[in-house]
Image (spheres, rainbow, N blue to C red):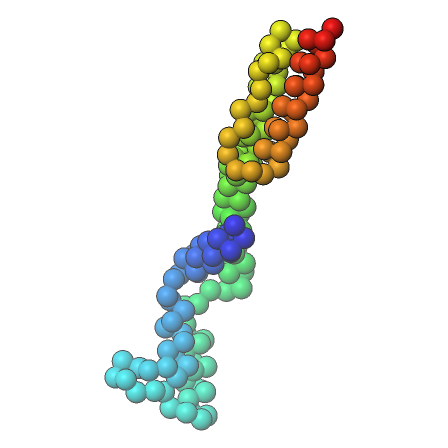
Length: 143
């Protein structure tokens, strides 16, 4: 989930920062030009790259910060929704066991929790509760 969140954050930031607009600036630093040639090297190349940087319609640090904050807010909201959904799915067996345990009373101690799903901690808890209900049933029957 962390990897997916990080990838989504990068994608959102990339989109908010203008997508491939940054590639234009990279080309001005000596990448291939339209004719397939590279920019001049040495002092002339540095001067050309510097001029291109100052003429570039790039983002100011404040704009980058604002857009990164927007991306962070979007990911925070998505994380809250995703966390709520995942927690609900993980805790569903606990709610099912709790509802079944409430239904079982002194009059129907022969009922047991239905254990379905993987053999995990919830299945172990359900098995323990079923054993407890069996002992309670035996104690009630003996009295």
